[in-house]
Length: 247
Ligand code: UDP
Image 1 (tube, rainbow, N blue to C red):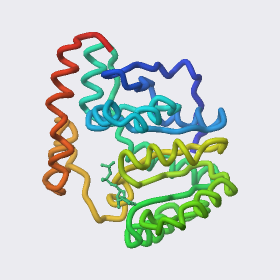
Image 2 (image 1 turned 60 degrees about the horizontal axis):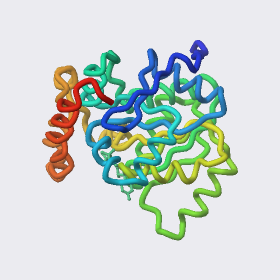
Image 3 (image 1 turned 90 degrees about the vertical axis):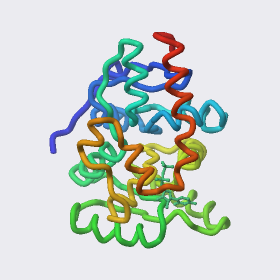
Image 4 (image 1 turned 180 degrees about the vertical axis):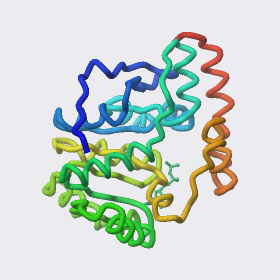
């Protein structure tokens, strides 16, 4: 695979309801450019998370300190468009997958943290088949006992992975990364339910629903227990609408 790099100027930081988000031409190039500059945290922002960040200062601080915040949800893309910033939606699951392929091609060290033990076992098997040369230096499920976490975090700091994908759910994955990655190189990215999808335990919405911006509805159908998480969406729409072109 061709090596890609990007100038920092390709990335413009904007705000949606006060929460930062980066408009960039190519999120994969931006991520690889960030790796070349010493690494950092990547956040995948959607409307739900934007609203959560306004309520939860620890999540808000983690997003504000992140080095690359990509517009993962259609609501964030729409809010940017109202400010005159036109960017495509960049699903985090797709960026994470493309970074794994890049990691294999460039001999990056990769660590995976999160999801159930069953999902992590399945994912290890699948990655061996799909990306046989991937240098997986650590893979730990996300249901460790409390006293196992300090050891796991210390191991990560010693291993210095080039890419750490973390599936612990929002907001835990963002705040955990913000704390653990300090002084560590590499790209650290929260990936939510991506491991579950890759392992075949959950499905992504069909393409036509993604095109219509209805991925959230599909997820709700698959996991009805998420209903309370979308209650904030009408407020998001109203607030963005009310603010007009303001950030
Ligand atoms: N998870 C975990 N440890 C926990 C709680 C959750 O590893 O203590 C994992 C869970 O198994 C799933 C992911 O975190 O793989 C969260 O997925 P979800 O789709 O809920 O992500 P979100 O919508 O919060 O980004």
